[in-house]
Image (cartoon, rainbow over all chains, first blue to last red; front, side, top):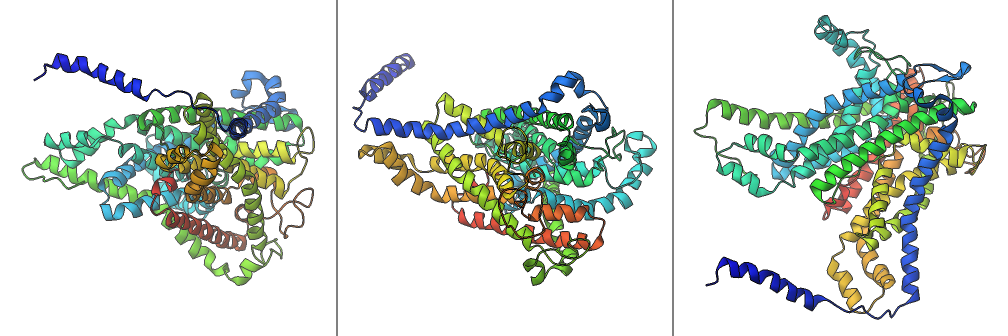
Length: 340
Length: 299
């Protein structure tokens, strides 16, 4: 019978031997030049991604340069937007974008997390394939169809029922919920964008929930916890980085959402004061007015600079979310395709 | 997961157990309700305009589109998807092969990061890029104007990272023992890739291409900057006559018009677009019945 000490001493020895045995000499380069050439051709594929990324950054920076040069950093907090007087400022559009994105996140996060728990833990096994498919199919519905649906369904619903109700209840105490019930506005756009990002947040959260080690769940049950206690207090806490990561990816998707927002947000360059106000987002402004703006170089540059701001936000946010999820899931990560 | 016995627990814990479990189901139904609602609303409001003539004629009448249908949009979308695929399929597979071959190297890590970031670039930014590269008539660029080539290649840019990611994943799903076996028999990298890895990954790559097409079919914003819209059938691919129709653009233009009739037509066109997108989606799922992990990755 060996003592633990001997065992511990033996282990490095064994691996050393294994290491000696597997060490192989460099194989003679039989294929030679054609193989190296093939390697170089493949590298071209990687290079094409670098070039595409470079083109995106370069085009945005170069085309925005007249505006960056003219207005400097104050572009970010100036509210002037007057093409005739050549004054441009991003502030109303940044604020509008944040309003819509904020409402979208607030409405979608609870829905997405509960749905993810349903997909990973509560759906009976015979149903789990179907419900996951439904969730993923929702992600495939085009932005423009969501927008058209918003106009024909959400706007009348908000205008005639939800917004008057909101103004008569919460609006009596907080001005934040008040306003003219137009239907169109940051609320309509935010709710529809919220629905659009639920599948992304829910499927990424589901994937991280499926990574929780079963030992942890079994230990929780062994201690007498109920299913809900295990799922909500143990698993959910364990995957918190995954949830944060998926919400960050959802934010990155929501800020760039264009067509649905363009149809619903009202397109007024005023700064929304309440949840029922109309506004304008960066993406909807660009899609709506860029074709007019190209006539004047400075006007076009100001619009491209708005696009550059959007690009920088999404790149930063997606890098962060990706990093969090990669750390949690080790390489397998749902992609985030910018919505149309 | 099996149900856990709850006898002997306090009423509060039993109640909480049922409530939280029930809430997950309710929230799920709420989350997927738009899928059913959208199909229902589009069917309810667009059905009356949907007939063979709607599919097979181009818009006429005043306001334009009040008579005729969406043939221009269907043909135009097809043209755009073909151009987008012609760019993105070879480039995406090329980049995917590189990521698979170079695997864990630092350069590959950078390429993978940039490819993932390209997936998240907002569609209006792609529109700006496409405009300055393909459409603009001043400065450097191709000077193609608002045209099918400009719009299609911009959509191709959007598709490249999608095809890249799915190609790499499909190649990784080819069992390592096949690859090692090929090398052990003395095959070169090129032979292994051509005869072992690519055939094994073909189904997955096909799925990736369809996923990319699914994504760009619904793209509208990039086309506002690069192609816009045409009520006729395509006559050329570049220049002042180069713009083509597009289903998504057509819906956008119709819902913007203050005409009840055009709204009905927009709903009917949405129904057609939804039909194509959902049929493609279901087709992808049937194709990858055995290996669902690919289909769930993107989109």
